[in-house]
Length: 319
View 1: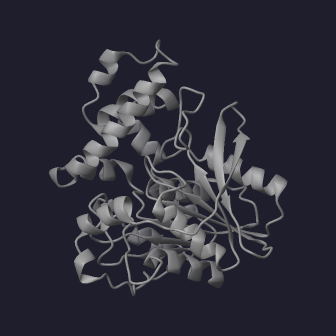
View 2: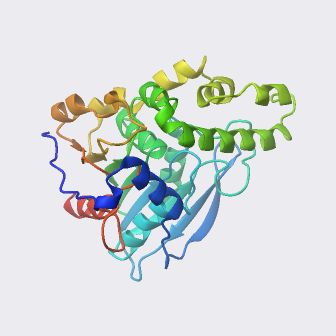
């Protein structure tokens, strides 16, 4: 499928990727969305918190929304998508990954970029308890990688799942990890690392035999965190093995339903490999849009909703 020519025009003040990323992540506020929380128990005994929001009238359409690293279902990029969809006859269920809903999860493991099992659990739960005939999956950043990996690695995707949308997605994790460790991303790197280590410190109270104070002191980078915790807790040899096995890039050729990827060219979190031009050209189901501006999950424009949110609605209506 030819690459989609983007029509996104960033306001002048938000053409710098850093500004767009920070404003969208820390300053934007979406009002007027009512969410109802549902807790489900997954097959390994842990729990997931789902935040539902609904249209005024009954609908057969649902969007499942997955947040990014250390996000939640209350982040503005999630609630913006949910609100717009709700206003246009699409219910939304915003998934909080394990440990991201304001309460630590029960098990030693939590979530990571390649953990598609929990998405499968959510879809199964929706199929068993609801009557939606059209289901779309939208993931941001880490959640985008989960979305693409799920769509590309599974052969038993329910026919009700009609499409996928991935925004600012680090589909080649090793390359994205390299970018996050560069000087230009130092502020983001330190914020992510601090939040993750603080969560691990809290988890050490439940698992003192697996996490010690010395272990926490040894985590100086995100790579250290992935090497010590993500890999150790989720069955990978080390951080490099985790990145290799979990990257969605290798699964893109196998995607068989319409899937939209929007990655800004000035996204400082993404390496060159995260723009899967070859895969998009060779897979008629894959639509790749690469706006010049947008930063990381920062497609700001005039009006109440962001460009990626309006493109999501268009994509749902077209497929």
